[in-house]
Amino acid sequence: MGTPANNSSTANVSRNMCGWHRFRTPSGILPHGRAGRPRGCLPRCGYQAAISWVHPEYPFFLPVKVLSRVFRGKFCASSKRLYRRNQLRCAGPAATLAEPKQFRRLLRRLHRQDWVVYAKQAFGGPMQVLRYLGRYTHRVAISNHRLLAFDGNRATFRWKHNAHGSKQRKMTLPGTEFLRRFFLHVLPKGFVRIRHFGFLAYGSRARQLALCRQSLAMSPPAPPPAGSCEDDIPAWHCPRCGTPMVVA
Image (tube, rainbow, N blue to C red; front, top):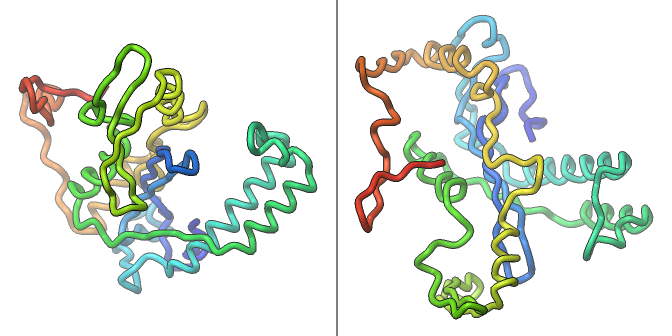
């Protein structure tokens, strides 16, 4: 998605964090990706020397219409490439797409359709970023307070109907169907919940962050006091019993 921004003043970083999760809608499962990127970047020569931080020319990342067209093009091109390599699995409701003619027809429909890309305003700081992404990366498919009853065979839970004013409703399902829906939220093999790109990439994170701080005239973070460990300071406590909570 960095293609429209590939000009002489663009960062070598096109995005820096992407989270992946899945949630269920009345029409089925909707895979969902959320990406966060900095409002500015290192210049292209930032790998060799720290120069001034490149600030955006406009108060937004990209026009939403441009971003939606680029995303549509890259998604369709990647799908076509995987299909030619026989790496795109067509099963279940998509079994008819195993026929090349049907797959080409689907791609034509996708190209004619306007895609929707939603870009939020700047978060405002690192804590806002963590709070926003934490809703999707560090919670399970259904929280305990939504589970209402289980009689050994059927499970009853509360759900929110977004299409009708976010009204709370109850649903009862057989245990096997409840588990099937729950495990639909488990990411497929080969996917990870969070990926880091650009200056947060694992191979060069320390060096690139140092360059970012230098170009922004920021002081390096103070080292932790001797004998202290971040793991010894729990970030959350259980609201019921007060026990420190950890992310496994």
